[in-house]
Length: 84
Image (cartoon, rainbow, N blue to C red; front, top):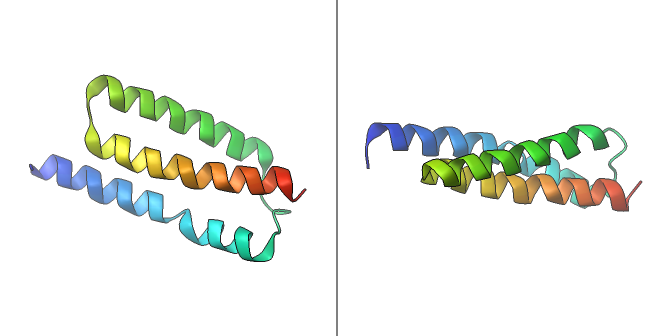
């Protein structure tokens, strides 16, 4: 593995982990009042586009990071819709 891939995994890991505290907080409190539905819809669409891009260029760090990030962002989106 080259240094560029390592950098990609580190960047993707850190930006993905940034969503974990929000998912945990929403799950525990069942409150999404301060979360913007439009923002998370746009974020999820953007992440899907990053996944397509990552697939087309064959970038594993990009695919893994955005796959996990999409999972976390969709969880927040589902909570936002469910606990309005």
